[in-house]
Image 1 (cartoon, protein in one colour):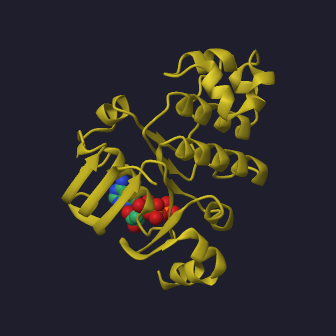
Image 2 (cartoon, helix red, strand yellow; image 1 turned 30 degrees about the horizontal axis):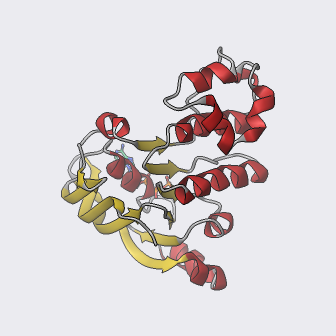
Image 3 (tube, protein in one colour; image 1 turned 90 degrees about the vertical axis):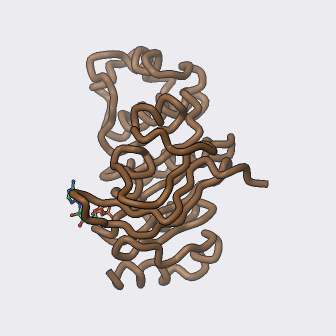
Length: 229
Ligand code: ATP
């Protein structure tokens, strides 16, 4: 029932200054699927996401985006429907919420369909929103553009549990609508309750790949792997 792989790596290695941080990664995320990438600090989660996004050049292996070789830059991949979300909220503080949404590639209505709670703030200056509301605004703007692939790197860092749930639910609905979604998330239990599948990185390699349902039933498995780092 899942669609084709929209992002896929084979034997991927990547790092900095020619030194690999992640090794031999085979991973794919299919249309309609939401996958969690977990692992201890320094395991290589961010490096993996940045490489899949095109922000870091692979040191080896192959990388495909939407059935073709990755275009090789985040700029070009973004034009073709890849979205990289981070915890640095890319909003225009002096503008209203409505104008922030208008500056995106999707419609205001589509943004509100993901986050109806933004409607009451449409005429407020974005810079006056709480941190959580600003993150909701920046994610709403991106999801309104209906990206094919969403790579989310700890986008809920420091936010209240209720906001974390809202952000993850919106990413879930983007996946249900056909996007391929890969998230790095430190709130492991809530992430596990949202994703279909999980990968755990230990020192730059995939140490575990499992469906989320199995991991929800065996919660110690992931924390044990964090300790293995
Ligand atoms: P965290 O949860 O701490 O962000 P992570 O799993 O996302 O961890 P990465 O951020 O990918 O891990 O970092 C993996 C390793 O790569 C770390 O040892 C880090 O010091 C190193 N690293 C990260 N960015 C750079 C950089 N720009 N230059 C050199 N080394 C880097």
